[in-house]
Image (tube, rainbow, N blue to C red; front, side, top):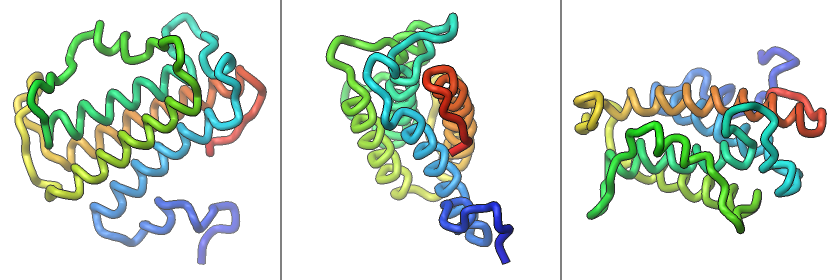
Length: 173
């Protein structure tokens, strides 16, 4: 029987007795959706407001995570001609930078599309599939999924704090 304070419809709860792949996918999707929930209902101005000394904004987190998805899945596992894996601090900083015309709606749609593409790419490979990585030598899909869970969860925490600073809304999900 589920604990009464745990929503039994949450992906990680549903996958609690599933196989490794189902559990990894469920946790990554949970954190992806948490980030999206944190920006929903905000104005573009609120989502783009800097509340901390770094470049981190709610809108910037969406933009950054969109780049992260493409970098770790498509560029490593299904690269297209001319693709370059982004490795520099300048690339990381630029991934948070907002441009005129960036809106919560367009950034969320781009992030959702990147996540969909990541799911399609990842589905083509076993967890043990290994690809070359320009900094680490080689990585397995399993390692990439765990890394993306970690990175997305970390940024979901940032989004949680930024949302609270923006309008007082709290909650882990």
